[in-house]
Image (cartoon, rainbow, N blue to C red; front, side):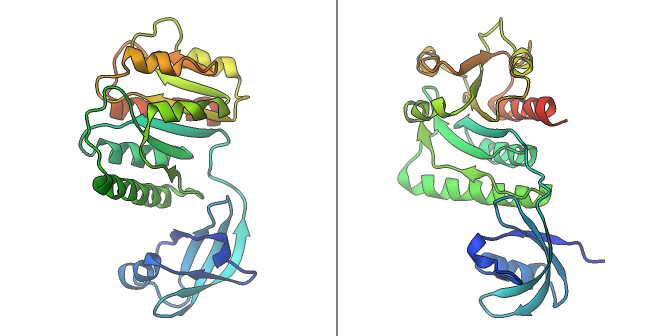
Length: 249
């Protein structure tokens, strides 16, 4: 039996009976997966609904799917988690985007902090962000999510700080924090906070200047992740996994 594929569409591609698939997914469905008339395909609308469909007809630029059913049962986390990730070297952010998508983050924002050493210019910025968006899309499909995380453009910490007040709490893992742990902070919340930001430093961690900028927000909590210092590509994944464990399992 052929495995059921999952794809994502916009709301305007859906009507009462049919869904129209357009863009790159047309080639992927026809020529890569080699789906045929009558094959089953799951469609998510990025708003929490999943549609069960079968292929009705093929055209050069579109595929028409017939809707068999719909469910609003969600695979998404009840707690909305945004990851602000200090920009790491090489392709480490590829792994971070992939794994944090699997774990359920709603949004990922690459951030330039004081100790970021990666050189970003206009030409490679666009290519990098598009690559991360594609990785998030593929990871969402693989993990059965109903929404693809939003991957934002690269931003400076000074600009990010202006948006932190909109979160119920901002978790900042910091190697010099000894008193407060992530566990104690999450337990104190009792699952009442539905909008959480996690801010992770790059290689070399946060500078004193970064921390000074961050703690100006009253909802920022500096926390320890344990006795060992985690790499930047580990810290975000570990933090999101702990949040998922505390509030979802």
